Structures are given as structure tokens and as C-alpha cells.
Length: 357
Image 1 (cartoon, rainbow, N blue to C red):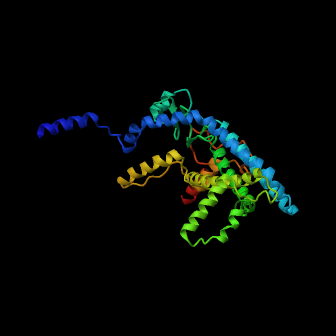
Image 2 (cartoon, rainbow, N blue to C red):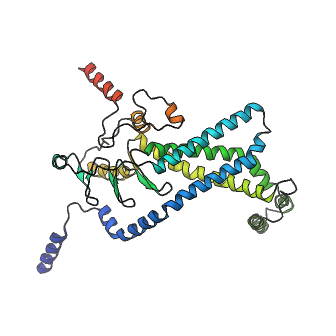
Image 3 (spheres, rainbow, N blue to C red):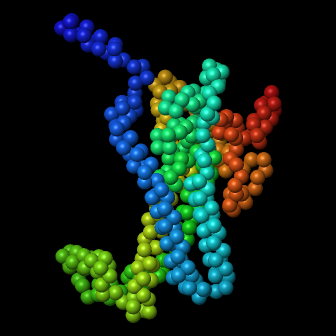
């Protein structure tokens, strides 16, 4: 027994790693799966990009072809409201999408300063052998270290980092507003085309209280919808193309509103806390370690909700909110290498300390 304990202790000593954690074990086991996933995301990136452009274009075409003629029947103030709102959203969506897709997120400096490494100011990336400023991370898909990396987004075929983070959240916000607008605008047409058909009018002739009849009725309705049978949209003067387009645009925009709305809300919460998606995971682990030691972890990059948003949106040096509501190419606050608080915030903190003294 003692002999076995000695062997086990020797094996444990040889394999012991103070930095070992569940995350490290998980990454090691599923490393090949992650590599395969990264490969496919890298290869399919352009297809995702073209897919977003194609879907957005289809919604715009349907809006002009089938929704705008209906809107023109409204009163003049409502027509003006729709035209201004729709084109304001469209311009912002197109602008911010192309900016987030084709703007570099910011890369770690190529030159390696030994003094910075010795002082502990920066660390060294073990994968690309470059200095790694605070909040930087190596993207396994792009094969580069990105400044304040949030995540790699396949829908833009690019990383979201320091220099295009504002474009990303602005695109998500305006796309959500756009899909909500199209969903609300097409709602009445959708109800007319989806429900006001021959099959729907047959519902009253069925005894739906009977479970068997209700099941048969719903099955028939779904099959007829899929095969476009027994519809009366032609009776109303609508073509099959218009009918399909109205159903398509309403369902697509409703689904995007729910999915993208949840994603946007999640990212807005992170921005308000001064975190990126990657930092959210690492900070949770840090907080857990601190709690074990009876300490409280505080995010060093959290300057308060208001200042966190100002940093992201670049609303410093008296910049107007119009730069957020309208397309703007102004840079974010800071260089992505250092993370001081906004100048106005730092000045207020200094005044507060002087007042206390």
C-alpha cells in the first residue's frame, strides 16, 4: 500500500500544474473541436457576410415594392414620417454594417519592447509572439492579437475590437429598430395574407373543441400554407409573389427582432459594466477566486455606466449625440493600449478629492 502511495505521489508531482483549472482542462480536451470550428468559420466568413447583405437587400426591395404603395395611401404627415424614419434607419444600417465589417478592430503593436515586458506593463502572446496590451486577446480565427477584443463575429467576417466596437453596437441597435419598424408596418398586410384565405374561413365550420378535428385542421392549414394551395390572394388582386413576399418579410423581421434584440440587450449590459464578452467570462472566474479569499473583485475598466458608454461611443471632448444618431467616422476614446478614465470624469474625481480634503 505504501509503495502504491509513493508511486501516486510521484505521478501527481510530475503532472502538477498550479495554473490548472477546469477551463484549461476543457480547452485541452475540446481543442481539436475548436480548431475545426474555427476553420469552418474562417472559410464560411464571406458567405455569412454576403448572406446578411442579401437578406437586408431583399427586405428593402419588398418594402419599396409592396409596403411603400400602401404607405402612400396614408395622410401626408404619416407618409412623411414613414419616409424619413425608413430611410434614416436604412442609411444607418448600411453605414454601420460596412464600417464594422471593413474597419480594423485594432491590432497589437508588431514591435516588442523588452522594457515593457520586464516592467509587467504588457504580456507576451504565446501564439503570435507579440506584446499583448491590457484587454487584448488572440483571435484563433483571424490569427492575430486584437485590441480590446470582444468576440469574432462570423456575420461581419471580422473581429469586434476597440476601433469598430461602436460600429458593431450601432449596427445591432439600428438593425433592431429597422426590423421592428418593418414588422409593425407589414403587420396588417401579413394578417390579411396569412389569415384571410379560404382555409381560414373554413375554421368556423369545424368543431375545434374536438381534439382530433383541431389536429386535422391545423395540419391541413400548415400543409396548405407550405404548398400555397387554396389561397384567395389572387381574388384580392395580389400576386403569388406579393403574397409570399409579405409572409417572408414579416416572419424574417420578427425572428431577427427577437434574436438580435436579445443579443443587443446582452451587449448593452456588458458595455454598461465596462466589460467585453471575453472579459465577462474571465471576470466571473476572477470574482470566484476573490470570493474564496474573502475579497471583492472590482473590474478595473468599469468607470460607471455613463462613462462606460461615453468611452465606447467616443462622446468625449464635447462631441454631440448627433454623432451617434447619424453616421459618423469619429474614433473611439483612447488608443486601445491604455485605459485611463474619460478626461471629464478624471477632472470631477480630482475636484471631489480636493473638496473632501
